[in-house]
Image (cartoon, rainbow, N blue to C red):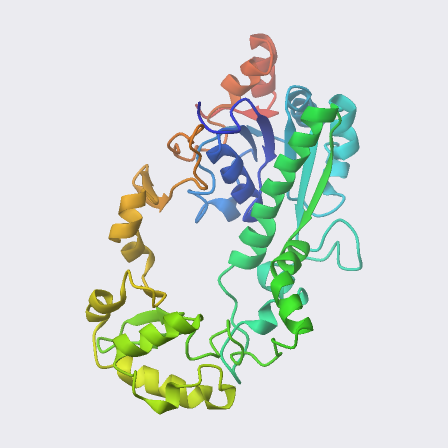
Length: 382
């Protein structure tokens, strides 16, 4: 088998960011994902989407033409799912909205990826990851004390709260359709997914254990036992011994076991002093030296690595955490399955590379395909 989703067929109306991430996740797990690209490709996806577009075929067409719309709907007839990342209402105007798709295939699972959701006062407004996580309450919590909020790359909104949420929603919908024979619409919004990711902090807030002051809480870098520290060679390490026994071990290995300042791990008014004392100790050795002392112990330690360093770290190498696809190092498919391991990823294809082959697989006659190519409805770059 090629993964747990082998035999599932998904149509992806190609976009940028979270949509391609959803397609990557589904394709990694063995689903046959057909990427429907616009003719000429998407300029916004030309850079930085190589890994996100891996392991699927591409058909390129003019979705604004009636003939292009009909091609998509014929693909839907033989598919298990379809997902898109347009603004609300765009798919409907193009004739490929949920009603159109479900009319052709009542079993199809129709996934929708937006920032603000399909409804609400902001539904039609433009936005990006940072805006969605700001309104969800996540961005306010990220950053150093008395400094401005810092966007955590676009991991929280686009990918964790967006693309991964839609992939999960699609699989849930596919399971339901398999049991019931009925498809449905999956409305995945990045603001909703980000809010879901923040649920632990809603709980901590309710328990009086989370303040709105950045950099003053246990898990946001405020605690001296959950932070990063600079080493003698200007590198960084992470220390996270939250549990008392791990904290005690950290003190021993840092040479601070007898320092009374650190006796009370949760003496929050003295956290700044404690942090300064730990920073002073860490700064006496290089990152490599701390690796020899701390790595693999219960101190809850790891060096802070760059992407290039992470790809060659012995632990990641031993687990096969990275793969090289068409000369590009990237993360391997995850999670892992004992009975249905995913196949190795394949390179991203140029938009339209597989147009003829895909249409043939979906029952288009050779003469139909040739006519679609000649009249400009689809593009063939094979």
